[in-house]
Length: 164
Image (cartoon, rainbow, N blue to C red):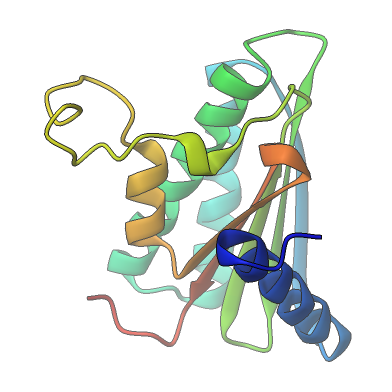
């Protein structure tokens, strides 16, 4: 087990998530199984509308959640499942301790190493038309954590934290 650098951070995050889960009082759990087509993103928007209405999420936070989830699901469909109609994307939502909204997006693709994704703000990448999704998700969410060789993404929003 690699317990240096990013390996240690992933290990620590997994332990923290396990401990949080142990003491969890969940009042919301939603699950969607999505086709590997961009038209499936409509179901994500519907789910987010239901969550917003149930938990009175502020508009700015709702917009950030919408952008991040659309990016995560689109990445799972396009890059993970490669639009393969035999593969699905699983989306789960949990409201935790009346404060955190956590999403899990899982694809059935081959996976990838998120650490190898180039920095889109570097001089050689800044003019590229794509490649900003993970960067954007990291900026808008309070936490993102990849697991299962990049096939699973856990995204957490702290609903009591003010937007920066």
